[in-house]
Structure formats: C-alpha cells, structure tokens
Amino acid sequence: MNDVDVVVIGSGIGGLVAGALLARYGKSVVVCESHTIAGGAAHSFSRRGFHFDSGPSFYCGLSDPTSLNPLRQVLDALDESIDAVPYDPFGHYHFPDRTIPIYGSLDRYRATLAELSPEGAIEFDRLKPRLLSLYAAMQGIPTLTLRADVALIPVLLSRHLPSLLKLLPQLGAIQGSVADLMRDLRDPWLRRLIDLECFLLSGLKAEGTIAPEIAFMVGERSRSVVDYPIGGSGAIVEALVRGLRRWGGEVRLGAHVEQILLESGRAVGVRLRSGETLRASTVISNASVWDTYCHLLKPEDLPSSYRQQALQTPTIDSFMHLHLGIRAEELDALTGHHVVVHDYDSDLTAPGNTCMISIPSVWDSSLAPAGHHVVHAYTLEPYEGWSRDTAYDTRKRDRAEPLFRALERIISDVRQRVVLELIGTPLTHAHYLRRHQGTYGPAIVAKQGMFPGPKTPIAGLYRVGDSTMPGIGVPAVAASGILCANSLVQSSQTAKLVQQVLTQNQ
Ligand SMILES: Cc1cc2nc3c(=O)[nH]c(=O)nc-3n(C[C@H](O)[C@H](O)[C@H](O)COP(=O)(O)OP(=O)(O)OC[C@H]3O[C@@H](n4cnc5c(N)ncnc54)[C@H](O)[C@@H]3O)c2cc1C
Image 1: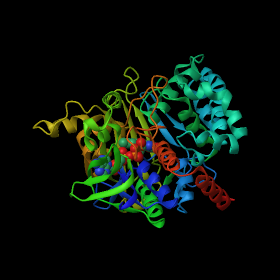
Image 2: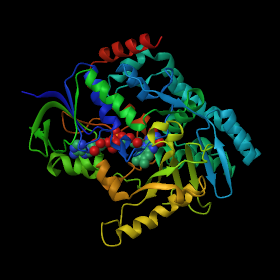
Image 3: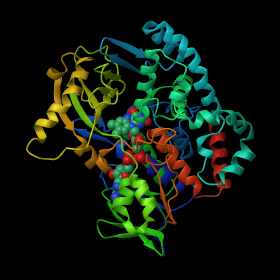
C-alpha cells in the first residue's frame, strides 16, 4: 500500500515543477523539503523588514505569455501567474576602466559594443545570426511537450515535424560550445562580453558553455522581456507551491529525507529524519547528484562503476554572499542589476574577481522598509579550506571585501549606509541550500560530457534539478522538472495539457 504516488525530495524549482506537473496530471504528490522555507537556491528570506533573494534574481519572460521560458509554460499549465516588472537595461557591467549598459535588444547590445570596439560590433553581426538561428530552431518545440525517453521520438515526428526539420541542420551547433560559434571571431571585447554572459549563466566561460544555453538567453532577452517578480524570487516559489496545492499536492517543510527506501532493487519510498516513512511508487530526488548518491542511498544500492562516475562529476565553486539593508537617500538614479569585474588580468571565474549585484527594491519597494534598499552581492568562492574555527569571522570579513569594493563602484558610500549586514560563506550556502560543498552545480564542460537525464539505474527513482539535463539556472531546472514529469505519464496526457495551455493563451 502506497501513501502517495510520488514523493519528491526537495522543493527547489526543479522539484516543485516536477511535483506540481505530476499533481496536474492527477497523481498524488508529496514534496518533502528539509528547510523550513521552500525554494532551495531560489528561496527568499526576511530579516527586520528586508526581504532577500538567497540566489537568483536575473529572470526573463515571467510576465510575457509568449515567452519560451519553461517556468512560464509551467505556471500557465498550473493556472498560476506572477506579477513581474519589466525593465531595461538588463544590467550594467562595470569593468576596471569603464561601465556599460547591457540592453535586451540586440541592436542596443551592438550599439554598446560598437562604442567599445567597432571591430567587435562588426564581428557581432556574424555571431548574432548564428545564435538567433539556433534560437529560432528551438522556438517551434515548446519545452512543455518534451520528455526524456524514447516516447519523445513519435511525439516529435507526429506533432513537430516542420520544427524538427528546422532543427536538424543545427544539430552540430546544439551539441557544441559557444566558443565553437566564435572560432573565427577575434575581437577581445566581443570575446570578453560573451565569456561574461556565459559565466553568468553556466558558471563556465564560452569554451565550456553549450551553445543552446546562450542562444536561448540571447533570443529570449531580445524577443521577450527581462523582468523581476514582485515579491522577489520567493514569489516564483510561492506560485509553484500554490499550483502544486491547487492540483491536490502537498509540500511538507522541515521534512528532511534521510534515506530512499528500496525493496528488491526498486525505490518504494523515503524515510524522514523524524522516523516517519512515506511509501510511493515513484521517488524523485531534487537533491544534487552528490547528495542523492552519497547521503540518500547506501553505496551498495547503485552499480559501483555508475556511482563512482556520477560522484566524480566536477563541481563549480560555492559563493561568498553579502546581504545588506542600506539607507536609500539620494539614490534615485540607482538601477537594479550590476556585474563588476575587478581585474582584467585575473580570470573572470577567479574567486572575488566577478561580482554579481542585485538591488531588487529598485523595482519592488515592498522588499525593504521605507527609505531603504535591499542588496544581494555574491561572487564565487571555493569550499575547500573553510571551517568554523577561530579564524572564521576574520576570514569571512576578508573574503567579503571584493563584494564591498564592487558595491562601491555603484554606491560610493555604501559602507556608511549599511543598517543590516549578513555575510554568507560557502559553509552558509551549503547549510541553507543543503548542497554538497555549497556548489553552484556541476562543471560539465560542453563536448566533454552531458548532463544526465532524470532516469537512474534504480527502478522508480528519478532525479531533477541542476545536476540533470539541461543544467543550471531557473529556466533549465524548470525544464528538468518538465522532462521528468512528462516521462512519467503517457504522451497523450502531455498533448492534452499542452493543448489546454495553448487554448487558454489564445
Ligand atoms: C547565488 C546564486 C545566484 C543565482 N542566480 C541565478 C539567476 O539570476 N538566474 C537564474 O536563472 N539562475 C540563477 N541561479 C541558479 C538557480 O538558482 C539554480 O540553478 C536553481 O534554483 C537550482 O534549482 P534545483 O531545482 O536544482 O534545486 P535546489 O535549489 O538545489 O533545491 C534543492 C532542494 O532540495 C532540498 N533538499 C536537499 N536534500 C534534501 C533532503 N535530504 N531532504 C529534503 N530536502 C532536501 C534542499 O533543501 C533544497 O531546497 C543562481 C544560483 C545561485 C546559488
């Protein structure tokens, strides 16, 4: 006797999407979240009237019904929506000697580049059609129709043949890296900007980032809108939780899963830290590959070569975080998103060199008390070497320094404005996000490896989230949830759902 059809371990965006879609398909679903707040990397938290995003804040297409953002398609399927504020420029990129605005529109992107380097703008004219033709080829097949098993083939052949034919000539580019699309392009500014765009998305530069990821981002930014959800990233999580509940699913917070239960080699449920067991015919883990295979299963549960290979997946570093509440007087011209590169001579990916900054109270004043702004700044930081020893506090302050210096590029007297300061280290990140070494995700380099699909060698056990296909980032993990959920139902059920969404959007 099962308690439910599906147990999902973890309420990251990937877990919530998979759980909510399966509830939408009529399955009984329980999502067990270890933390007391849902959302994983995308959760919001509050201190003294300041509402912080713990992770993502760069979004697009949330308020655009025509967006190809898989998250938006899922919200439509759940009859949910979120209010979002469109804005442009998307952000300001601050280099050691100059600051440039980055706009969604590719013509304006080119104009910015032309001011930096006329040659770069000319080369961009060669890169742009390569990216847009890849995006156009992907455009015809909505992510909501996709699944991760052989049943995808008849779906594509019967319902999306023209789009499939458009995609075929792009197969090489789809499997290649962004750098492959730029082999004949030499301009240092163009290369630096594209490396930075890749890094912001995948944590890797152009050489390591798969081409469709950037093509999708460039295409969506220019065709749809760049926008920020009112209420912060937590508003997205709330919409998914509402959607899950609307279709009969349940989220349990503070419900840490200790073990995935197997019988005769098949997953049959989970045991919580409280000692309670939940039996289910399907278990979906939204925990990372390392956490799932090291902590939730016993070593003997998996074929040893498979386990070894999976656990050898390289990691991207963790983060230093700075969450600040600041006084807002005389900051009327402040904009919300910034990326600061401190040093041309250091690699973009070097810890502390590239700092991401989000000040979302610029768009949604309810995120901070009146007269204040809420600030989140973060930069890569290796997990190794961090421990809560006597040097912890000093080291923490020291490693937060590049973030303060980055903020000073935008608000010169930021240190005098601080009324609330929280510094997070890789240990904080690993603790609150329940992630192996607080990693941003797998460092799977284009052409050297591929993100695995949702299936595992254990019958009844599936995985979703940023250590599965297509990879890291909110749209990507939403897509992973779709792939997993659709693979667990008949393709006719998916076709019916997609049709309903199309009709409702007309
Ligand atoms: C600092 C930062 C900034 C980012 N910025 C952006 C951005 O601007 N735009 C963008 O698109 N993406 C961004 N990303 C990436 C994006 O946020 C993540 O890729 C995505 O949210 C990860 O989702 P996930 O589904 O893989 O799950 P996760 O967010 O990793 O969630 C997994 C969940 O599982 C839970 N869990 C783990 N183990 C257990 C257990 N044993 N029992 C119960 N629960 C468990 C965890 O508590 C967690 O809630 C950012 C990420 C970070 C860290």
